[in-house]
Amino acid sequence: MENKTNSSVPKLYEAFKQSFDIGAAVNPHTIIQAGELIAKHYNSITAENEMKFASVHPTEDTYTFEQADQIVAFAKSNGMKMRGHTLVWHNQTTEWLFQEADGSPVSRERLYERLKSHIDTVVKRYKGDIYAWDVVNEVITDEGADPLRPSKWLDIAGPGFIAKAFEFAHEADPKAQLFYNDYNESNPMKRDKIYNLVKSLLEQGVPVHGIGLQAHWSLYSPGLDDIRAAIEKYASLGLRLQLTELDVSMFRHDDLRTDLVHPTEEMLELQEKRYEQLFNLLREYDKHIDAVTFWGAADDYTWLNDFPIRGRKNWPMLFNESHEPKGSFWRVVK
Ligand code: HAH
Image (cartoon, helix red, strand yellow):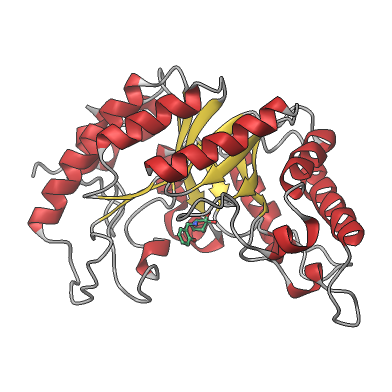
């Protein structure tokens, strides 16, 4: 391929100026390793882990905001927007949250007090800096008719914790856009469960403003028709949509190979075609979609190197391990 100097590589987000913002998930490590790339190509960021419950609120009386603050400062100094991720989730919470000091399960009332005080503290701290929050993450089941995922939140608080989280976030920052965020969002059965949950929240007057489609996708799935149907169904609620965690894994769901140290030529070609089709589709719906955030910045670091198989390399991004644009980049900016 033709060798491009750095300055002749167009900015990714500028290629989408007429359509939507382009974001990246960052962490303290990638800000150092890839800060220049991130500042050039993305006009929005999300903290990958640093605003999650366990990261900012390790004990009842302690908040640890150093890393989150650094990431917000990075966004500000580079003129980027900032999304908040995430206030209520079943993972990366802390033991103390669901327990009394003596280790017994916390009461429902106490859990609601803790929920309110957590959301109030975190959302107010970043008022004016964070324009959109993933308020509730992944409460819908992947399989089965029961819509809500079993969790300590559900066990102790009952299903009302979902609406309350949005209400508390809205009180803390009435200007912030509040999102329900989930994965496998394009699977027709899960899509309908997500749709029904959000529809019923809206009918109760709960302040939900958008749906985050995580978009942890692969070369092979989901199909474009399922993605289109999901976008149309969610948009029919009259809400804003964002892709919040986009990546395109090289591996099928059931492909457990761990031997590759480089992507094959075939993988790279399939990925170029896939990214081109995906962004063509997303541009078609740019009236509904405000932002597309990748769950990473370049192939040197991605959470998929440890998921679903610890230590298995993956190459899901538009930039390679040396931070150079891949063929997929040129297909989407064209
Ligand atoms: C996302 N879950 C989370 O929203 C994000 O916070 C995390 O950093 C990575 C991915 C996706 C997911 C998962 O964690 C487990 C099973 C399926 C999907």
